[in-house]
Amino acid sequence: MRYFLINKNLDAEVAKDFLTEVNNHPSEAIKIYLTSHGGAVSCSNMMLDIIATEPSRFTIVALEEIHSAAFSLFFRANCKRVIGPDLLASYHLTRKEISMSDTGQPYYDFDLFYMHQNKERVKDHDRFCQILGMTAVELKTMADCEDIVFTTARLQQMLAASEKHFEEKWIERGIPVGGPIGFGQEASLYYRNG
Image (cartoon, rainbow, N blue to C red; front, side, top):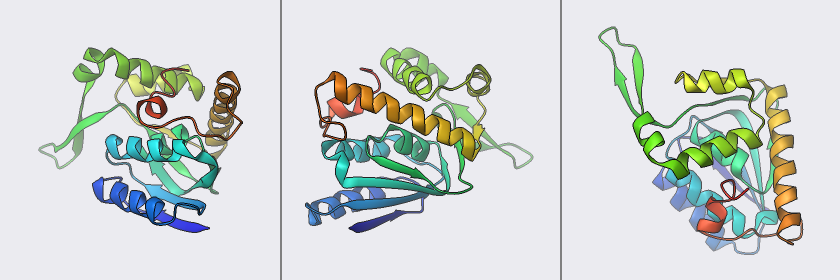
């Protein structure tokens, strides 16, 4: 068993290190310890594609906190996932830029125009929220461009919903439960096709 720690924002360096770890140890199981404020969705998607090729090889353990792209990585991954005790997690719409107001408070430029111009991205986002069983209040909070903060108990409910979805997709596609889903676009479109 190999161990891979992600304790910073997901970026190109994390994605490259993960790919290197996977390639350098092609037959070993990898347990990923994840605590992150988020980062680049593109890096999260690259890691999801790798995990989807051999999901039984990977375990993700969410510790302390997962936000934004890290939340997406954890809940979209089709491998074994474990929620650590007292996990703090949040999710929000895509943010393009963080700026500072005159009072020194950060405010976010939400990429709403892009989200609404890109129908596939909106469908993917909506499907992801539906699979996790997000409530009307949670969806309203997100629509108001605020973070949704989840309790550990709520995260356990969403993990169960996500696991059920993956199991149904494996059965529907005739793939042994826990087997590889695909690589590249097939894996990254997993929720969109569901």
